[in-house]
Image 1: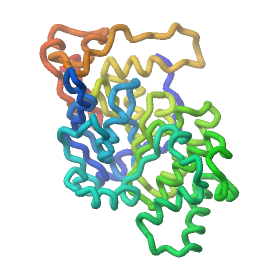
Image 2 (image 1 turned 90 degrees about the horizontal axis):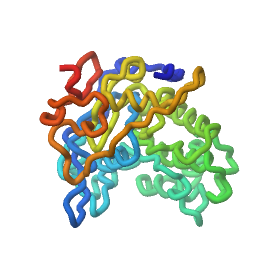
Image 3 (image 1 turned 30 degrees about the vertical axis):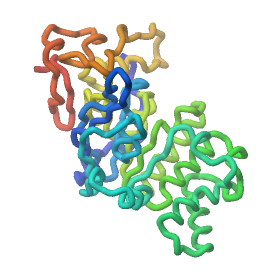
Image 4 (image 1 turned 90 degrees about the vertical axis):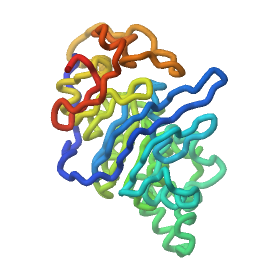
Length: 334
């Protein structure tokens, strides 16, 4: 296993125990002519106040769909089958559309993946940021609105000249920081960042990642950071939830999960991090993911697990707490 990447956050997930977000039994399916694709399969997790939780896994594992389910942004043919999402004690699943619109941006916001496709190319940055603010505070004065936009640009490290620019006049990293500014415009208690650095080169990734850390520190928000880069997650988050085929298979504090990953899939993810200290062959996970329309009995990782046992093919392992704050769904630890 490669050495653990340097952690640059304070890593204090248990300092404040107040839960901002609780997700219980969330299920999201996509309807197809040959049956429902089970994209999110009854996941449970929580987020503490001021904490950053990393949601990781390979492409197609259900990370983005899970957060779309939390914000009730799942579009047809997708649908939320079941679940309870408590944000500061308020169940988002029970809200009407008008009530939900009031909660978005003010209590929970999304920093989308791919700022190039998220910003309107024919609107200036000032107008795009103003849209969200005016939707919730329509009586704000023009001067106060202008000052707030400049304040937001400064908060994410952008120069004031960006105020009057169009998206095509900005670099990729600047566009992503505009999206961050929009996400924090109304001081939400929860920010969901969907792979905010995936389309950027490594140098700009660092700038955007540092921007997220600075915003979190200054505003005291809680954050869910979606990604598949385990090295980057090690530098940004307090805890990590590992997803595979719509299921959460391990949740633990970041240092614990890197020093001693328990689930075989988590071990493979961490082994995929290139080492700067030694040359070694790339470890590839053999086998294919099961058909998401027809999951097998037993463990969902059984077809690709190097340590699979007969019991794994018969009984699905529950997500159990083996150590303080360290949960894993695996029969190896029974």
